[in-house]
Image 1 (cartoon, rainbow, N blue to C red):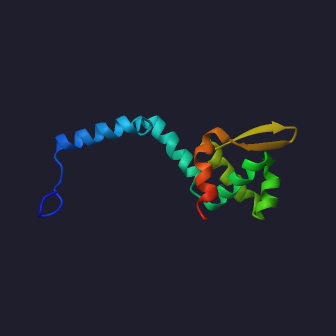
Image 2 (image 1 turned 90 degrees about the vertical axis):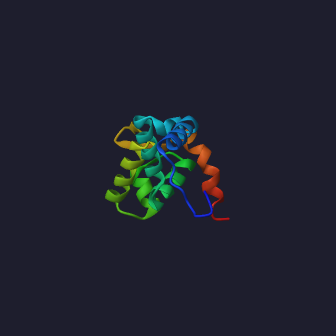
Image 3 (image 1 turned 180 degrees about the vertical axis):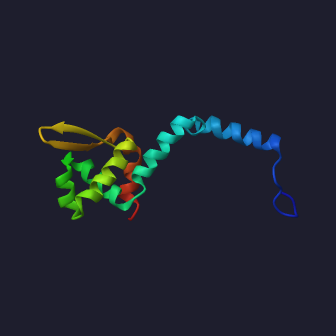
Length: 120
């Protein structure tokens, strides 16, 4: 930057910035890993999905239990569960006629402290 304001970086400077970003954030540099990371954050990017994640953090639940806890429509909860499962935030398993959902705590634990303390 000079006294005239912002200067646009040239191609060589931007190549160094890109290389530095790829070095510090290798998952973002790989297109398939970046897609997975984007799906994970999409799974967290909705108020209802955050509420579902908090319920599943406490206990594994079936969809009907989640619907009861949230007081919403089953179709809406089902939609959110699909997004969360696609993002790797939750897993499901069959137990008889029920599908039981659980949160992937190892993936979510680095973020859970922020979620718990954000509104303090």
